[in-house]
Image (tube, rainbow, N blue to C red):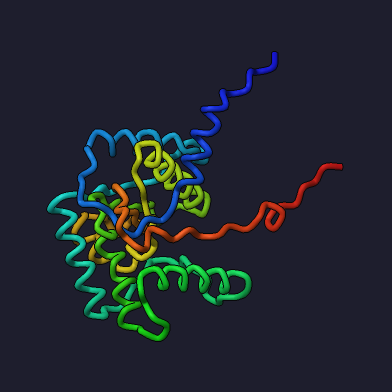
Length: 233
């Protein structure tokens, strides 16, 4: 028996949630209700994982706890304390086409936020906004048990994407942040993360600030034909 196609409205709603996802770098102070955040995380937990091990762990930080954490992270960045990420997120050696894509995005962002080429101080201030979670009312920090393998990192990535898409369904925006993992010792001290876990990344979550210039950034995507080989015959 052939299943009926889903209603057009349902297809459009899913596609709209995915395609409207963006990395928002400026949020309103408006709080996110605990019930809404819990619902988003519960929906996201339907992400697949190998043998259903569900390896992801989340620290949801709000209110005074978030203020203390962001103050400590921002102070470390301003003081120029060395970053100590526990794994390599970016390529150790940049090459084409990834280097060009990274540069293009960076200059797009800097143009919107008024950072001039060569102005390292302004660039560092823009980078430093990561450590306040861009003013979001919710900061999420993700960890994995350190003895897990690459498959669990894939599982965690799917969980992260589910959070971002579920958030869009509630009218919220997000920004996944590798930078949050740059100071794992601070995160461990404030959130009680044990040494047996690897700090993966952070995520800002909240209501986008329509007045923030950085939120006008629309990153480009390669066409399907550029990254797909269709095998049909």
